[in-house]
Length: 153
Image (cartoon, rainbow, N blue to C red; front, side, top):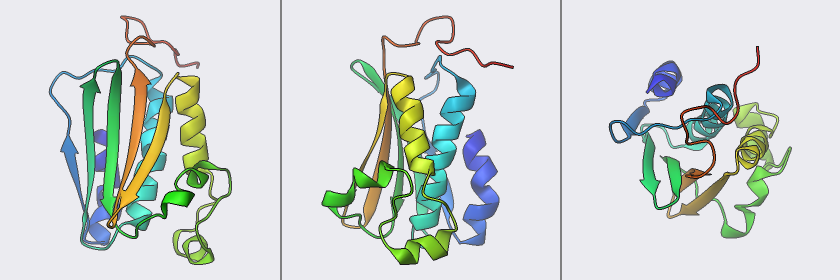
């Protein structure tokens, strides 16, 4: 909820809105700063590449042995053969994206590296103009009373 609030000025300036769909009481014990960075990077991507006037949906659920957090947006479909490439450092689908978003092409690569360090992953699917990024963490990694990756001051 906090991240969607932080993105509100950007979303509203483009006629977009954020939708939060997370069950009450779902908790994750891990490095909060690193997971926030993952969500910021994925949300920034979703906002940059979604159509004007659409919604960005952030949802979460516990599924068998993982907790999955999804960020979905409506925009241009990413070709299936390029879905894994978007997580490579400096990768851009085309030169038009480079000038429109101003990013260096590192956000999704950083997000994937952070999730791998947590024993999870971040993946993407895209079909009929709907792109969904799914962030997963296994239940048996860091879901105890103590954080798996304590923040370092």
